[in-house]
Image (cartoon, rainbow, N blue to C red):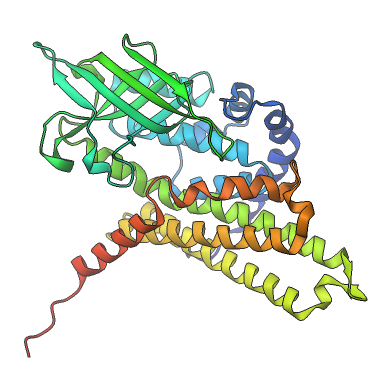
Amino acid sequence: MPAFSLGPEQTAWCAELRTLAAERLRPLADKGEPGHVNRPLLAELARLGLLARLFASGALDLCLMRESLAQACTEAETALALQGLGAHPVHAHGSPAQRERWLPRVADGSAVAAFALSEPGAGSDAAALSLAAEPDGGEGWRLTGVKCWISNAPEADFYTVFARTTPGAGARGVTAFLVPADRPGLTGSALEMLSPHPIGALDFDAVPVGADDVLGERDRGFAVAMGTLNLFRPSVGAFAVGMAQAALDATVAHTRRREAFHGTLRDLQTVSHQVAEMALRTEAARLMVYAAATAYDEGAADVPKRAAMAKLLATETAQFVVDTAVQLHGARALRRGHLLEHLYREVRAPRIYEGASEVQRGIIAKELYATARPEEAR
């Protein structure tokens, strides 16, 4: 399947997802409390089979789900994505016992997952994390330190936690652990953020973990984190494309009917050209997201570069499109409860989480130089 073309079945599935999001997920999202996990919404995502599909499909499928849901219900999109992000390391690197205990509960919506990588002093520079995994004198460790900006914290049922097992070793000294929320010494607090989904901080006070809690191999946790992000970065781009499309659709409808200057807004060339630019950028971002996801599914060698490009272009594009949509709608778009007021708050965070735009540019440059052919000496 070409990266730039969806088949009839995929197109129909995306349309079905948009309808389900509007009719079945949107009402549940509206009943949720901003900043808190919406468990009824998760349960409905499970009944629709979407949470189970996180572990049974590829990157393109994930992108299509996130883009389609985002057009009609960003809360449902984010709830689905956070389950995938938190649980993917268990799916990809967990032991049979870990997988059997947690993945069915994630799929049926009864267990909330979270991905705990960022720290107060280690956000974009994830290799600098300092949460300490100190040997306990036996075969286990005690986790001591703080995680911050963690989606679904402190309400998650388990966390994929990245901790330093070898001091001074940078990315090569990090281990991934599966930490249930009821472990002694683990506490958390909610953070009030611009984005409406739940985000919090976690405090680890000598939290016990053992060999059975390790995801993958000791000191190889950074590879677990980066492998997860290579899958989810294009899908962050898909989330952004979905928001951009929703803003574009709203703007086309508004400018067709809004009367101004003896006509409608669409009759003003400056307006119609802005709408055309919004559409152009949205479609370009969509194509790059699909290409990156297809490259991941095909096991291409340049996935890190493509994933970074897709996330960078799509999130920056969505910021432009939503901002332009607000401008063309005027003051009504700033009123609490308006679609664009909601999207304006949602669209800012994706340019930061899972690697800020500046980090994505660094990854792209690094990959370009690593694969460049040496010039002949002159």
